[in-house]
Length: 352
Ligand SMILES: *Cc1c(COP(=O)(O)O)cnc(C)c1O
Image 1 (cartoon, rainbow, N blue to C red):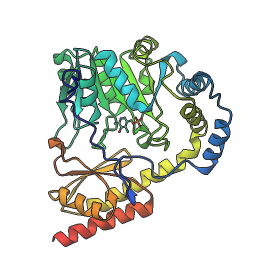
Image 2: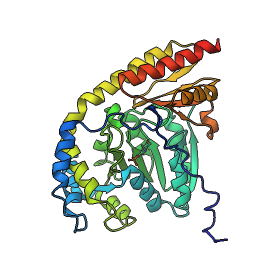
Image 3: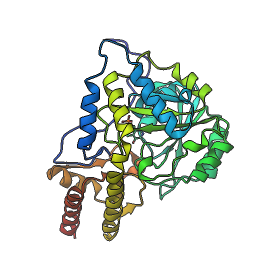
Image 4: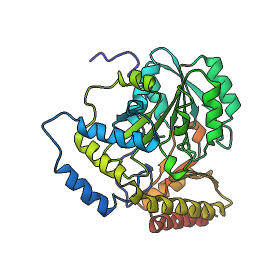
Protein backbone atom coordinates (compact mmCIF):
# COMPACT_ATOMS: atom_id res chain seq x y z
CA UNK A 1 0.00 0.00 0.00
CA UNK A 2 1.23 3.44 -0.87
CA UNK A 3 0.69 6.36 1.45
CA UNK A 4 -0.98 9.23 -0.34
CA UNK A 5 -1.36 12.72 1.05
CA UNK A 6 -4.07 13.19 3.65
CA UNK A 7 -7.58 13.36 2.21
CA UNK A 8 -6.67 12.48 -1.39
CA UNK A 9 -8.78 9.34 -0.99
CA UNK A 10 -11.83 11.45 -0.14
CA UNK A 11 -11.27 13.91 -2.97
CA UNK A 12 -14.04 13.71 -5.60
CA UNK A 13 -13.14 13.14 -9.26
CA UNK A 14 -14.54 15.17 -12.13
CA UNK A 15 -17.53 13.09 -13.21
CA UNK A 16 -17.69 14.22 -16.85
CA UNK A 17 -17.81 11.22 -19.17
CA UNK A 18 -15.63 11.59 -22.23
CA UNK A 19 -17.22 9.16 -24.59
CA UNK A 20 -18.10 9.63 -28.24
CA UNK A 21 -21.73 9.93 -29.22
CA UNK A 22 -23.48 10.32 -32.54
CA UNK A 23 -24.78 13.56 -31.07
CA UNK A 24 -22.46 14.81 -28.36
CA UNK A 25 -24.19 17.56 -26.41
CA UNK A 26 -22.83 16.75 -22.95
CA UNK A 27 -19.76 18.95 -22.53
CA UNK A 28 -20.68 22.40 -23.91
CA UNK A 29 -17.99 22.17 -26.56
CA UNK A 30 -18.43 23.79 -29.93
CA UNK A 31 -20.05 21.22 -32.20
CA UNK A 32 -18.21 22.76 -35.17
CA UNK A 33 -14.49 22.50 -35.72
CA UNK A 34 -12.55 25.65 -36.70
CA UNK A 35 -13.71 27.55 -39.81
CA UNK A 36 -11.63 26.27 -42.81
CA UNK A 37 -10.02 29.66 -43.35
CA UNK A 38 -8.80 29.65 -39.75
CA UNK A 39 -7.53 26.05 -39.98
CA UNK A 40 -5.48 26.97 -43.03
CA UNK A 41 -3.85 29.91 -41.26
CA UNK A 42 -3.24 27.80 -38.14
CA UNK A 43 -1.39 25.12 -40.12
CA UNK A 44 0.67 27.74 -41.87
CA UNK A 45 1.58 29.31 -38.52
CA UNK A 46 2.47 25.94 -36.97
CA UNK A 47 5.04 25.35 -39.69
CA UNK A 48 7.00 28.29 -38.23
CA UNK A 49 7.01 27.20 -34.60
CA UNK A 50 10.44 26.96 -32.96
CA UNK A 51 10.09 23.49 -31.49
CA UNK A 52 13.59 23.64 -30.03
CA UNK A 53 12.83 26.68 -27.85
CA UNK A 54 10.75 27.05 -24.71
CA UNK A 55 7.59 28.99 -25.53
CA UNK A 56 8.06 32.73 -25.23
CA UNK A 57 7.33 34.55 -28.45
CA UNK A 58 4.06 32.63 -28.86
CA UNK A 59 3.05 33.36 -25.27
CA UNK A 60 3.65 37.11 -25.44
CA UNK A 61 2.14 37.50 -28.87
CA UNK A 62 -1.19 36.19 -27.61
CA UNK A 63 -0.94 38.18 -24.37
CA UNK A 64 -0.37 41.37 -26.35
CA UNK A 65 -3.33 40.76 -28.59
CA UNK A 66 -5.63 40.18 -25.63
CA UNK A 67 -4.22 43.19 -23.77
CA UNK A 68 -4.81 45.39 -26.79
CA UNK A 69 -8.37 44.17 -27.24
CA UNK A 70 -9.31 45.01 -23.64
CA UNK A 71 -7.10 48.12 -23.36
CA UNK A 72 -5.19 46.69 -20.40
CA UNK A 73 -1.45 46.24 -19.82
CA UNK A 74 0.15 42.90 -20.79
CA UNK A 75 1.16 42.48 -17.10
CA UNK A 76 -2.53 42.17 -16.26
CA UNK A 77 -2.88 38.97 -18.25
CA UNK A 78 -1.94 35.36 -17.53
CA UNK A 79 -2.55 32.48 -19.91
CA UNK A 80 -3.40 28.95 -18.85
CA UNK A 81 -4.03 25.42 -20.13
CA UNK A 82 -7.71 26.09 -20.44
CA UNK A 83 -9.29 28.41 -17.92
CA UNK A 84 -9.27 25.26 -15.76
CA UNK A 85 -5.59 25.82 -15.02
CA UNK A 86 -6.22 29.51 -14.36
CA UNK A 87 -9.01 28.75 -11.89
CA UNK A 88 -7.00 26.03 -10.19
CA UNK A 89 -4.04 28.38 -9.71
CA UNK A 90 -6.24 31.18 -8.39
CA UNK A 91 -7.59 28.72 -5.82
CA UNK A 92 -3.98 27.86 -4.90
CA UNK A 93 -3.08 31.53 -4.63
CA UNK A 94 -5.89 32.34 -2.20
CA UNK A 95 -6.64 28.95 -0.61
CA UNK A 96 -4.25 27.13 1.73
CA UNK A 97 -6.23 27.06 4.97
CA UNK A 98 -8.49 29.95 3.99
CA UNK A 99 -12.12 29.99 2.89
CA UNK A 100 -13.40 30.16 -0.68
CA UNK A 101 -17.08 30.93 -1.32
CA UNK A 102 -18.84 29.73 -4.48
CA UNK A 103 -22.46 29.19 -5.48
CA UNK A 104 -24.14 25.79 -5.68
CA UNK A 105 -25.18 24.58 -8.19
CA UNK A 106 -22.35 25.92 -10.31
CA UNK A 107 -19.21 24.53 -11.93
CA UNK A 108 -18.54 21.28 -10.05
CA UNK A 109 -14.78 21.80 -10.23
CA UNK A 110 -14.80 24.70 -7.73
CA UNK A 111 -15.31 22.24 -4.89
CA UNK A 112 -12.50 20.03 -6.15
CA UNK A 113 -10.04 22.91 -6.64
CA UNK A 114 -10.87 24.16 -3.15
CA UNK A 115 -9.98 20.74 -1.71
CA UNK A 116 -6.81 20.52 -3.83
CA UNK A 117 -5.77 23.95 -2.56
CA UNK A 118 -6.45 22.84 1.02
CA UNK A 119 -8.99 25.61 1.32
CA UNK A 120 -12.35 25.36 3.01
CA UNK A 121 -15.05 25.47 0.35
CA UNK A 122 -18.10 27.46 1.49
CA UNK A 123 -21.23 26.80 -0.55
CA UNK A 124 -23.72 29.57 -1.28
CA UNK A 125 -27.07 28.12 -2.31
CA UNK A 126 -28.84 29.55 -5.35
CA UNK A 127 -32.62 29.95 -5.01
CA UNK A 128 -35.20 27.54 -6.41
CA UNK A 129 -35.01 29.27 -9.82
CA UNK A 130 -31.22 29.01 -9.60
CA UNK A 131 -30.91 32.79 -9.29
CA UNK A 132 -28.21 34.31 -7.11
CA UNK A 133 -29.39 36.73 -4.44
CA UNK A 134 -26.66 39.38 -4.65
CA UNK A 135 -27.27 40.88 -1.21
CA UNK A 136 -27.24 37.51 0.52
CA UNK A 137 -24.12 36.49 -1.38
CA UNK A 138 -22.31 39.62 -0.22
CA UNK A 139 -23.36 38.97 3.38
CA UNK A 140 -22.18 35.37 3.26
CA UNK A 141 -18.82 36.31 1.73
CA UNK A 142 -18.28 38.96 4.40
CA UNK A 143 -19.46 36.82 7.32
CA UNK A 144 -17.35 33.87 6.30
CA UNK A 145 -14.17 35.94 6.22
CA UNK A 146 -13.27 34.26 2.92
CA UNK A 147 -10.14 35.07 0.94
CA UNK A 148 -11.83 34.43 -2.37
CA UNK A 149 -15.37 34.58 -3.77
CA UNK A 150 -16.13 32.88 -7.08
CA UNK A 151 -19.03 33.35 -9.48
CA UNK A 152 -19.54 31.80 -12.88
CA UNK A 153 -21.38 34.26 -15.14
CA UNK A 154 -23.45 33.19 -17.01
CA UNK A 155 -23.64 30.17 -14.73
CA UNK A 156 -22.83 26.60 -15.66
CA UNK A 157 -24.91 24.38 -15.47
CA UNK A 158 -28.00 26.57 -14.91
CA UNK A 159 -27.56 29.11 -17.72
CA UNK A 160 -28.73 32.14 -15.73
CA UNK A 161 -26.78 35.36 -15.45
CA UNK A 162 -25.94 38.46 -13.44
CA UNK A 163 -25.91 41.91 -15.03
CA UNK A 164 -22.67 43.90 -15.08
CA UNK A 165 -24.28 46.22 -12.49
CA UNK A 166 -24.83 43.22 -10.17
CA UNK A 167 -21.24 42.09 -10.66
CA UNK A 168 -20.10 45.62 -9.84
CA UNK A 169 -22.27 45.64 -6.72
CA UNK A 170 -20.48 42.49 -5.51
CA UNK A 171 -16.99 43.69 -6.50
CA UNK A 172 -17.49 46.97 -4.67
CA UNK A 173 -19.07 45.41 -1.56
CA UNK A 174 -16.59 42.66 -0.73
CA UNK A 175 -12.96 43.15 0.28
CA UNK A 176 -11.59 39.77 -0.70
CA UNK A 177 -10.55 38.57 -4.16
CA UNK A 178 -13.44 38.01 -6.55
CA UNK A 179 -13.04 35.55 -9.41
CA UNK A 180 -15.56 35.91 -12.20
CA UNK A 181 -15.55 32.88 -14.47
CA UNK A 182 -16.74 34.10 -17.87
CA UNK A 183 -16.44 30.77 -19.73
CA UNK A 184 -19.73 31.41 -21.59
CA UNK A 185 -19.60 35.19 -21.92
CA UNK A 186 -19.60 35.20 -25.74
CA UNK A 187 -23.14 33.78 -25.68
CA UNK A 188 -24.28 36.58 -23.38
CA UNK A 189 -22.19 39.54 -24.51
CA UNK A 190 -22.05 41.51 -21.24
CA UNK A 191 -18.51 41.14 -19.96
CA UNK A 192 -17.31 42.65 -16.69
CA UNK A 193 -13.68 42.95 -17.83
CA UNK A 194 -14.14 46.74 -17.94
CA UNK A 195 -14.55 46.72 -14.14
CA UNK A 196 -11.04 45.38 -13.50
CA UNK A 197 -9.58 48.92 -13.72
CA UNK A 198 -11.88 50.13 -10.98
CA UNK A 199 -11.86 47.08 -8.68
CA UNK A 200 -8.39 45.63 -8.01
CA UNK A 201 -9.98 42.61 -6.27
CA UNK A 202 -11.71 41.50 -9.49
CA UNK A 203 -10.19 38.70 -11.59
CA UNK A 204 -11.91 37.67 -14.82
CA UNK A 205 -11.24 34.21 -16.32
CA UNK A 206 -12.02 33.44 -19.96
CA UNK A 207 -11.59 30.45 -22.25
CA UNK A 208 -11.12 29.55 -25.91
CA UNK A 209 -12.86 26.20 -25.28
CA UNK A 210 -16.48 27.16 -25.82
CA UNK A 211 -17.22 29.96 -28.31
CA UNK A 212 -13.90 29.61 -30.15
CA UNK A 213 -14.08 25.84 -30.59
CA UNK A 214 -10.61 25.27 -29.16
CA UNK A 215 -11.35 22.83 -26.31
CA UNK A 216 -8.70 20.48 -27.69
CA UNK A 217 -5.92 23.07 -27.58
CA UNK A 218 -6.51 23.96 -23.88
CA UNK A 219 -6.24 27.75 -23.83
CA UNK A 220 -7.65 30.13 -21.26
CA UNK A 221 -6.64 33.46 -19.75
CA UNK A 222 -7.30 35.83 -16.90
CA UNK A 223 -7.37 39.59 -16.62
CA UNK A 224 -6.66 41.23 -13.27
CA UNK A 225 -4.85 44.06 -11.59
CA UNK A 226 -1.12 43.68 -12.43
CA UNK A 227 -0.06 43.15 -8.77
CA UNK A 228 -2.70 40.44 -8.41
CA UNK A 229 -1.61 38.82 -11.67
CA UNK A 230 1.98 38.85 -10.47
CA UNK A 231 1.05 37.03 -7.26
CA UNK A 232 -1.10 34.43 -9.02
CA UNK A 233 1.67 33.98 -11.60
CA UNK A 234 3.91 32.59 -8.82
CA UNK A 235 1.80 29.44 -8.64
CA UNK A 236 2.45 28.37 -12.26
CA UNK A 237 5.23 26.11 -13.48
CA UNK A 238 7.78 27.78 -15.76
CA UNK A 239 6.80 27.31 -19.41
CA UNK A 240 3.50 25.69 -18.53
CA UNK A 241 1.98 26.42 -21.94
CA UNK A 242 3.04 24.70 -25.14
CA UNK A 243 4.00 26.60 -28.29
CA UNK A 244 1.62 24.64 -30.55
CA UNK A 245 -1.48 25.60 -28.62
CA UNK A 246 -0.30 29.16 -28.12
CA UNK A 247 0.40 29.66 -31.83
CA UNK A 248 -3.00 28.14 -32.64
CA UNK A 249 -4.82 30.42 -30.20
CA UNK A 250 -2.85 33.41 -31.50
CA UNK A 251 -4.31 32.84 -34.99
CA UNK A 252 -7.79 32.08 -33.66
CA UNK A 253 -7.78 35.30 -31.67
CA UNK A 254 -6.57 37.31 -34.68
CA UNK A 255 -9.40 35.82 -36.70
CA UNK A 256 -12.10 35.94 -34.03
CA UNK A 257 -14.46 37.85 -36.31
CA UNK A 258 -14.79 34.59 -38.26
CA UNK A 259 -16.58 33.12 -35.25
CA UNK A 260 -19.23 35.83 -34.94
CA UNK A 261 -21.74 34.23 -37.36
CA UNK A 262 -21.58 30.86 -35.60
CA UNK A 263 -21.97 32.44 -32.18
CA UNK A 264 -25.04 34.26 -33.49
CA UNK A 265 -26.35 31.04 -35.00
CA UNK A 266 -25.87 29.26 -31.69
CA UNK A 267 -27.73 31.97 -29.76
CA UNK A 268 -30.61 31.80 -32.26
CA UNK A 269 -30.70 28.00 -31.95
CA UNK A 270 -30.67 28.24 -28.15
CA UNK A 271 -33.67 30.55 -28.22
CA UNK A 272 -35.47 28.35 -30.75
CA UNK A 273 -34.91 25.23 -28.62
CA UNK A 274 -35.97 27.10 -25.48
CA UNK A 275 -39.27 28.13 -27.07
CA UNK A 276 -39.95 24.61 -28.33
CA UNK A 277 -39.06 22.85 -25.05
CA UNK A 278 -41.11 25.38 -23.07
CA UNK A 279 -44.28 24.02 -24.68
CA UNK A 280 -43.99 20.68 -22.87
CA UNK A 281 -45.93 20.87 -19.59
CA UNK A 282 -44.04 17.77 -18.37
CA UNK A 283 -40.72 19.54 -18.16
CA UNK A 284 -39.22 22.79 -16.92
CA UNK A 285 -36.63 24.58 -19.05
CA UNK A 286 -34.48 27.32 -17.57
CA UNK A 287 -33.72 30.50 -19.57
CA UNK A 288 -30.07 30.53 -20.60
CA UNK A 289 -27.42 32.99 -21.76
CA UNK A 290 -24.94 30.21 -22.54
CA UNK A 291 -24.50 27.52 -25.22
CA UNK A 292 -26.67 25.00 -23.33
CA UNK A 293 -30.09 24.59 -21.77
CA UNK A 294 -30.92 23.02 -18.42
CA UNK A 295 -34.16 21.07 -18.17
CA UNK A 296 -35.84 19.49 -15.16
CA UNK A 297 -38.39 16.70 -15.19
CA UNK A 298 -39.33 13.90 -12.77
CA UNK A 299 -38.24 11.24 -15.28
CA UNK A 300 -34.81 12.78 -16.00
CA UNK A 301 -33.04 9.51 -15.29
CA UNK A 302 -35.24 7.58 -17.74
CA UNK A 303 -34.94 10.32 -20.38
CA UNK A 304 -31.17 10.23 -20.01
CA UNK A 305 -31.18 6.45 -20.55
CA UNK A 306 -33.46 6.81 -23.56
CA UNK A 307 -31.20 9.46 -25.15
CA UNK A 308 -28.19 7.28 -24.39
CA UNK A 309 -29.87 4.40 -26.23
CA UNK A 310 -30.16 6.68 -29.28
CA UNK A 311 -26.46 7.54 -29.01
CA UNK A 312 -27.26 11.08 -27.86
CA UNK A 313 -25.05 12.19 -24.96
CA UNK A 314 -26.40 14.85 -22.57
CA UNK A 315 -25.17 15.67 -19.06
CA UNK A 316 -27.09 14.10 -16.19
CA UNK A 317 -26.21 15.28 -12.70
CA UNK A 318 -26.99 12.14 -10.77
CA UNK A 319 -24.41 12.90 -8.08
CA UNK A 320 -25.67 16.39 -7.28
CA UNK A 321 -28.71 16.65 -4.96
CA UNK A 322 -29.35 20.33 -5.87
CA UNK A 323 -29.58 19.33 -9.54
CA UNK A 324 -31.93 16.43 -8.94
CA UNK A 325 -33.89 15.52 -12.07
CA UNK A 326 -31.91 17.95 -14.22
CA UNK A 327 -30.30 17.37 -17.61
CA UNK A 328 -27.97 19.81 -19.33
CA UNK A 329 -28.09 19.85 -23.11
CA UNK A 330 -25.49 21.72 -25.15
CA UNK A 331 -26.72 23.47 -28.27
CA UNK A 332 -25.44 21.95 -31.50
CA UNK A 333 -26.17 22.53 -35.15
CA UNK A 334 -29.79 22.94 -36.20
CA UNK A 335 -30.12 19.30 -37.40
CA UNK A 336 -28.56 18.04 -34.16
CA UNK A 337 -30.89 20.17 -32.06
CA UNK A 338 -33.88 18.93 -34.05
CA UNK A 339 -32.86 15.34 -33.46
CA UNK A 340 -32.47 15.94 -29.73
CA UNK A 341 -35.83 17.70 -29.63
CA UNK A 342 -37.59 14.90 -31.50
CA UNK A 343 -36.11 12.34 -29.13
CA UNK A 344 -37.35 14.26 -26.09
CA UNK A 345 -40.77 14.64 -27.74
CA UNK A 346 -40.99 10.91 -28.46
CA UNK A 347 -39.99 10.09 -24.91
CA UNK A 348 -42.59 12.42 -23.38
CA UNK A 349 -45.36 11.18 -25.69
CA UNK A 350 -44.59 7.54 -24.87
CA UNK A 351 -44.76 8.43 -21.16
CA UNK A 352 -48.33 9.73 -21.36
C1 LIG B 1 -15.80 24.81 -19.64
C2 LIG B 1 -15.63 25.64 -18.40
C3 LIG B 1 -14.40 26.15 -17.97
C4 LIG B 1 -13.09 25.93 -18.56
O1 LIG B 1 -12.83 25.16 -19.52
P1 LIG B 1 -11.36 25.11 -20.12
O2 LIG B 1 -11.55 24.20 -21.28
O3 LIG B 1 -10.47 24.58 -19.08
O4 LIG B 1 -11.00 26.50 -20.51
C5 LIG B 1 -14.34 26.95 -16.86
N1 LIG B 1 -15.44 27.24 -16.19
C6 LIG B 1 -16.62 26.76 -16.54
C7 LIG B 1 -17.79 27.13 -15.74
C8 LIG B 1 -16.76 25.95 -17.65
O5 LIG B 1 -17.97 25.47 -17.96
